[in-house]
Amino acid sequence: MKHILIKKFIASPMSSACSSRVEFLGSGDEYVGISQSATNDLISGHPHRCRDVIMQAESLSAQASTQPDTPWSTLAPRPAIVRAAAPHRTPIYLTALVVVPCYLLYSMISASFSTNLPIISSSLNIDISQAQWIIHTELIVCCGFSAIVPKLSERLGLNRVFLAGAFLFAVVTFLMGFLGNSYASILVLRIISSIGLAMMLSLANTMAYFMSPRKDLSVVLTISNVCTPIGQILSSFLSGWIAYSSKWQYIYILIGCLSAVHAAYSVVLCPNFPTTRGVKFDVVGTLLMVASITLLIFSLSASTMTVPWWGVTICFILAIVFFVLFVFWNKQWCKNPLFPPTAFNKSVLLNMSALCMISAFGFGERFFLPYTIVIFYNYSRLSNGGFLVIGGVLSIIFSPLFSLSTKRVVSRLVLMMLSLISLLLVLIEAFFLQESVALPIVFSNLCLICFIGCLITVQTTAVINTPVMYISTLGSLNSIMLNFGHSLGVTTAVTTQNVVAKLGGVSNTNLPNWDADPSARTAYGLSLTFGILSCISFSITLFLLAIFMGVLKSDRGKLGFSERRLSKTKHFSENINNNGEMIEVQESSIAFTSQQVIASLFQPKFI
Image (cartoon, rainbow, N blue to C red):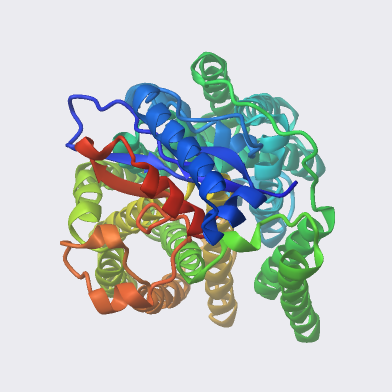
């Protein structure tokens, strides 16, 4: 017998800190089956069947007022990721202890390879362009494996996948400090540790979404975003100091130990999530996406290798072809796609594209600061670490301001302002790089503040306004775009710098007295200038993306809100700020009438 679904909203108890309005989840609410024949009789006006449906509706209304502590029902099957979203009762500091180290460890291990790349290339007797693939390997694996993490978390349980990734990353990173003595061993260990990092990083925001109270979610996300540059700064200082005082591999023993501590206490703090049987994985879609990303990165970085121009062109064209095939495969041909097509709309695509540009700009621009300080201006590694700490302190100071701005200003306006400011800062930093060491330090740290502001704005807006059924997909996309943007930014900047350095005849900067000739130093400074200038394309693209972004209903009263733009904005059908997933009612109207329940029969359901 066919059934239809009646949505029953159940009020959760209000704490003393909450206002008089209560928010209700709709995508995970309780559903009750009503026979299709009863509904047809109700529509046709049959008196007996109409009375039966009304009695059932009144029963639902009574349950809604007498059982407010039952937020989820087992009357109808739903994905485990939806059923798990009930409590949101973990204190904010415990949630931060689980989520924040993921971003800290990610930035630490990424910055350690970027900082020590010249040392690693000379230690392993390989070209620096070949050593760059140690960085690219992590980013490619993270992008590919992050795509299957949502399905994996449904099949095995969110907490189990998160903890497995944390322990895998900790153990393999620790072993890298002892076994990373050859190029092949480093690549193998890097691939395995990146799998654990992808599992951990993809589910970080998802864990924050389900663990923390909704009112504290923005605070957790702000702290996580601030830890990204802090990890970069801390790792740049420690990895450089350790590399020059002993061996460059020993930094990974430290990172592995920190990761092990995080994984150990996360076993106690992570709540237990249910599983969903019968989840299938899209292997073809994963391979298409990984092939597209790999070929794109290779084509962008091939200018530093002995690859002819036609080979680069073929790789770039194949990358586009594989990406187009992946889109069609995921949207039309695959029965179990990596990403559900319903999770994509204009708002999501613009938001994820903006996150990619933010990551590319932040990591690309920041990549050259240690080289400017240590190689171009001949400062010590210790001094470099001290200069980088300035950016970390400024990030901590300004992050609450950006968190507050998300509540007072629409996100598109914040992104437009920060993208223009960062564009101006990069131009000043690049053109005056050779004047004084203070100028690149000051303006690079100001760019870091803009980077943090953009990250907080985009991720807070995305996570808070995503329906619960799509939150794991959003976490996966967030990890993919963050890693792909990182690789895109660093590859573009380094490729531009290497091309200009070759044209200028710059010698190997690892050789002693490479700057004995003043013209060589000037040419190297010019290559750094063009490398930094290549990042302005990302800030310009971010500004253009922000222009086309929309606003939400919750943005009413914020600076930059427009009813006209709201009418043109496409949201999730179940979005918190629309009429689907969450609604707001007065406390006095918690007990619903039978007429309201009957009316819900004729409203479209988004399940």
